[in-house]
Length: 286
Image (cartoon, rainbow, N blue to C red; front, side, top):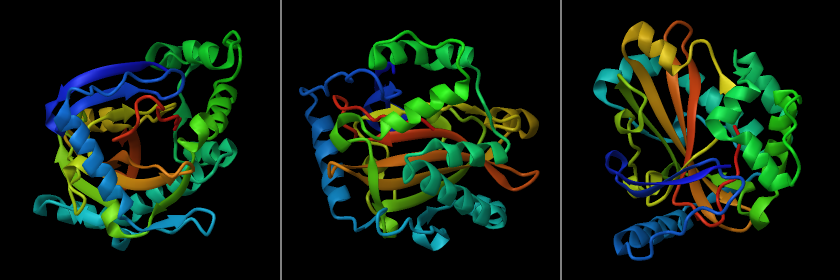
């Protein structure tokens, strides 16, 4: 996947951000001259190490509103109260079928049942360079005639085995410090406009020194862009989940969802990771 380095993402307080899809190449080295960035990264990792975790091998926990620290402005409280059960249902299924499950079939079936469809191969090539990543990773020509589902399935499955366990989730936070839901009404879904989690661990833990934007294979007719055109604003939730990986490392995934007021369902828009090791990357398709 493509690796690019962006700097000074001021709205998130991110000192350096990696907009990458995690697969193919080592990311650029963290700027060792940036003492502030390295200090923030180390502080976040110390905070992660103090959070109690539940191994997926024991059981994939069922998450509810009580599982999370919730940051909610007063003017969003009524709308969120009506829709929060659906939000945590969606988060539960994402954890169970995407994070704790190395086989794609159930995940694909769930996404389709939610009204999503795969983006086309051409779209994924333009947006996410899947053809160059395929050729780099597999040392073979990209199968242009293959169904997009088959290409997704291979990337999905192989992602769990990359980098000696750095990319295979094996445990999830069991306490609210490591699970956060931050809600706001927004008029744009660009990064600077979305709410930033804070909570007990602090802003740096959820929007830290490095930032990876992970690869989205899906489209929905009533996605965030369509809902903004229809309503002018949307209720947006940033759901942070602290994970432990097979090699012992810890880092969060932050899922961005928007509420469709027509049916009180939440649409998955983005998935980001923070304070990751850019040299080992974060292999993840969703």
